[in-house]
Image (cartoon, rainbow, N blue to C red; front, top):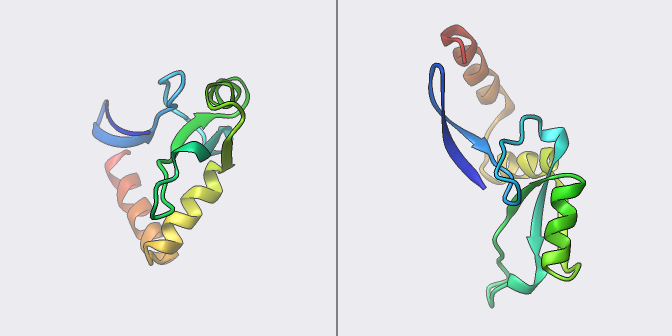
Length: 102
């Protein structure tokens, strides 16, 4: 899931594991998971965010192994692409965040 989390400098969105409810601190440690039994008639399904390993295994067990997944970093890349965001825009945002200490 994505949640707004209060940190020292304000509120910001973070990926939070749908199994253990801890923040996924590094995209390399997470997966975007899609339970296949929840695909609707339009071909859409909820995307869950989980830690690799134990948390993903718990999700698989919950859905009898019927869970597709993609690396969280790839998921983010696809969201950026599908939203028509330019990488130069992201760099500008990162520069602004560094200026204010985020």
